[in-house]
Amino acid sequence: MAKKNDYFDYRSKADELERILLSLQSPDIEIDEATRLHGEGLKLISELDAFLNQAEIVVKKHVADGE
Amino acid sequence: MNSELVFGVSDFVAYLNQTLETAYPYVTIEGEISNFRVSRNRWVYFDLKDDTASVRFFGTIYNLSGPLEDGMVVRVSGSPRLHPLYGFSVTIQTITPVGEGSLRRAAELLATKLSAEGLFAPERKRPLPYPPYRVALVTAGNSAAYADFIKILNARWRGVTVEHFDVQVQGEPAVGQIVGAIELANSLPELPDVLILTRGGGGVDDLAAFSTERITRAVAASRVPTLVAIGHEVDISLAEMAADRRASTPSNAAELLTPDRNVELRRLKEIRMALDGGLLGVVQRRRERVRQQQDELNHRLETVFRLAKARLQAAQRLIEAYDPTAALQRGYSLVWAENNGLVRSVTDVQVGANVRIQLSDGSIEATVM
Image 1: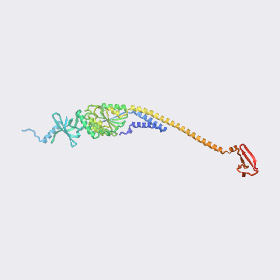
Image 2: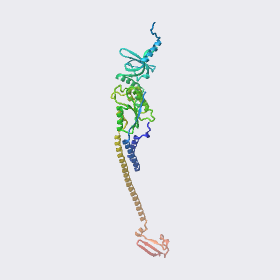
Image 3: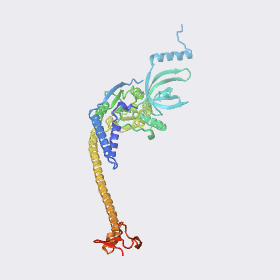
Image 4: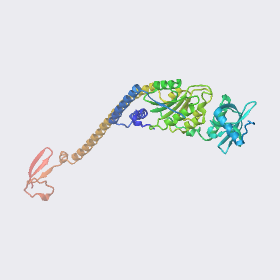
């Protein structure tokens, strides 16, 4: 598999964002924790938004010789 | 002088083979198969015939593009030989079904065989990563299929590395190049997340490569999950059946592989609003809780004060009950001796002693008689 560290892991970050949203809706969460999660969520949104707007497709060419 | 050339039998066979090698080292013959048989699971024999003639062919099962049977029309390339014992035959090098009926029948036979081996089994299908980071794209570089795939990919998603393997997708070299590309993609130091094999639509002959045994097996054997998209309307190729997932066209392949970035951007906006709303909700819930706690605290404090006051009132009533001046008010009096001791008994004083009698409104000095 690809070394995911070399790539922007969109799906993991998007999943993390959904988890943060879910945690913020918990009735037991404290304000300091909610504030921290809110900040993390905003940071993730900024990263994901930048990826969606700025990333490009890279094409590498290979030639298959066949037999 | 008799100049007639007389051969021994072996010499004649050798001479004829030499002539054949020189004149017809490689021939291609098209005809209908009859008497097809496989010996010891290795040797293949059949005749090719038309209305008036029949030619014998010999080869190994490794020369076959797939299963064959009598009645199929094929094009066979090989070398004509005269065997010293078994007579004339053509040694097969390649064999290709010809015509829609034969191609379809060959595909049916091969499908039955590969299906029995489990190559198309649903339990073999692997999920494709969504979205992928690196994709291996096996298709012709100058094709509409390549352009469509890249165009849709670019419109929907970015940040993908496309390892493009430029191959012919029809004609003689197609099978070898496609199999080579699949193997090469599977041997990259960093494996792609998904392998896409695609081409645009075409006639039955154009798409024949995608139903060959070699490509079908290469797709099935790929360590990298596969998506095969052959643009056609009627039959599904065997390569598609062996793939982890199939798409109808190259564009459809790009759509299946990736989310729509515009949808994702809208979702991000929604999450942003939900995050702010979530934090606001937490603050409001905490504020309400503090208000409840404050009410509870006030209530408890009031209770403490009320109890303390009740205890104080009880003590006060008790103290009042023991107050000696209350008895004086009712007409009782206290008699104090000269030494200020309370006279509790007649033996506490002597005759002639001075005493002080305390009443509610004053005192009287007296002498004991």
